[in-house]
Picture 1 (tube, rainbow, N blue to C red):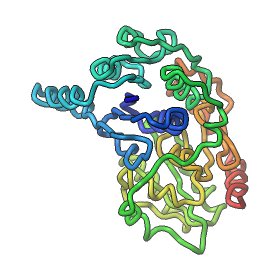
Picture 2: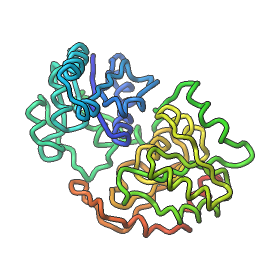
Picture 3: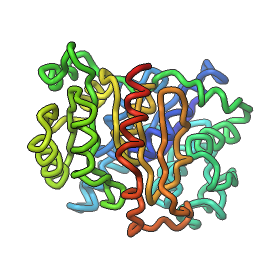
Length: 333
C-alpha cells in the first residue's frame, strides 16, 4: 500500500505527527510511506527509517518570492510523486489538502468541526472528527489509523521508540561543547511566541543551581541575545553555535537533560526519550505524553485549543525551585 502524509509545518507539529509512523509501520509492515513537508522544516524528517521518501516543497519560499516558473516547478515535483492509495492530510489547511488531492486516489483529513480551514474538507474523501482536547500526538495517530482502517493501543505512543535521527557528520558541530565530567543540559530559550518563553533571568537561576554543563541553543537574533545573557551570568553556561536542524538533532540526542518551552527543539528531546522538563503557559500541556523521562509543568491559565491566547504570559508563574527539583530528579535517573 502506498501512503502519503501531508504535514508542511511547523517543526513541533511535524514531530507530533511523526509519532504515528512507527504505529503505521507496526500495523501495516509492507506499506511504503512518503511525507510532504515545507523545505524550511523538512530536514526534521531526514534519516527517518519508516519513510520511503520526503518531498520538500518550497511553499514558504514561493510566498516570499513568487514567480510562475517556481510555481510550475513545485507543481511538477508534487504531481510526479503520485498516485498514492491513501493520502492523509495532517495539516488541515487548503494548501495541504490541495497537495493531498493532487497525488491521492483517496484522501483523508480532519472533519469540518476540528480542522484549521473548513474549506479544506471539500478535498477529502474521508473526514474524521477527533476532539481537539485529546492529546495532540494521539489525535494525529488516530487520524492515520482511522484513515488506514486499523486500531491501535495508546500505549504504543506512551512507550514509543525514539523516532528522530541524524547523520554521523551532524555531531561534529556540538562535539567540542559536550563534557564527560559533567551532565550536559540543553536550554531551549526561544519559540515563535514570546509568551511561550521562560524569563532569561530565571533561567540563570536554574543554570547556577544545577551547576552542570549548560548548553544554550538558538535560532534567531533574539534567542542569541537571550543565550548570551545567560552565559554572561552563569559560569557553567555556554552558547552553542547556530545549528542546522540535523545538527540540533545530534546535540539534543546526546544530552543528559533538556529544559524548554512548548517548541520544536524541546519536542525533539521528547521524541527521542531524552530526559526533559517541558514548560507550558499559553498552550495546552496535553500536546505530548509525560512519563519517567518527561516532566511537564503547566501554568494555571485555562487554555482553549481552538483559540490560543498569545498574550497569556502565565508561564512566568512556574517556580524556578520546581523546575530545578524536577531537573535534579531526572538527572539522578
